[in-house]
Amino acid sequence: MPDLTFNKSTDEEHEIELDSSLIYAVWKRGAAIAGQTAGFTIGTAFVGNGAKIKIKGKSENGENLGKISATISNNVYDGEFEIPEDTEIDDQIYFEVKLPDNGLDGESDRIPVVPPPEISNMRWSQSEARRGDTLTLSADVRNVRPHTEVMLTIYEYDRDSAHDKITELRAEVIDDKIEQEWEYEYHEDTDEIPTEEEMQEYGRNYNSPEYFFTIKLNDIEYGREQESGLLIFKDWIEIRVLNYTGNESYILHLADGSQRRGTFGGDGTAREEDVPPGRCSIEVEREN
Image 1 (cartoon, rainbow, N blue to C red):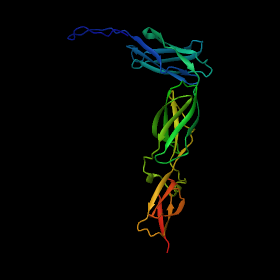
Image 2: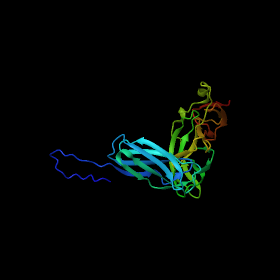
Image 3: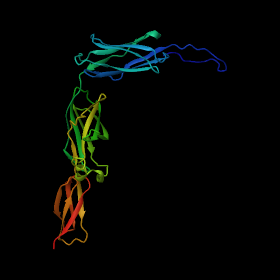
Image 4: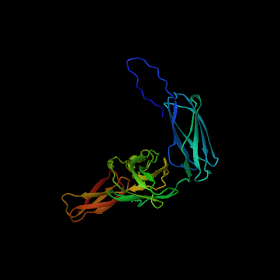
């Protein structure tokens, strides 16, 4: 690190010569994954915007990761190398840095090459969710160190791929598995869910809210193709008839275009479970 101490008077002009320097050259993660990219960052001082920089990636076993020729901006350069899939596991990779116009050179730290993670069997603990249900999100994980932290992201599925992010949950890899609980609650207004009748105007069909989750590990998000399967939201409705005489029944017209018929209990109430969420209408019939 250059000495930046200034101890001259401030009431007159001084000319100061600042020496350029290479401050750091480090990898962004503690390990490189075979078959994926490994990012790095280089920090300098007083080399000037546009200064030429040359970077050469290597491994201790003689693997050539490639060469980069670029320029520095604001004394920092960020880049990455592609780690070949056939790189030997536990080989140590590093990179050499040169700033030829500034007479600077250096070498990065060394990090090991590890096998790519294997994430499989992503699943929900149940296929349907009701308000207040506690669900378990789980997956099998291999080639990941115990207690590695991952990020689970739950999305509401959209047929046009404009998936809405619902929430993020942190979890750890334990015994080659990930398990995390989530309490389901639908936070939107179900009246805004398009009904079957409304969807048919656009040549489509009613779709109950569905969800999938992904797992983010080492800046890579697994499960974007809904490998977890889709979790379906099921709702319920309670009906109460006023001035109940005991002769009433009902027809429930549901958001998906289906109907349900039923009768009321002795107190004039009825409850329907596992109904498709959305706007519905009720017809009450009285027997003569």
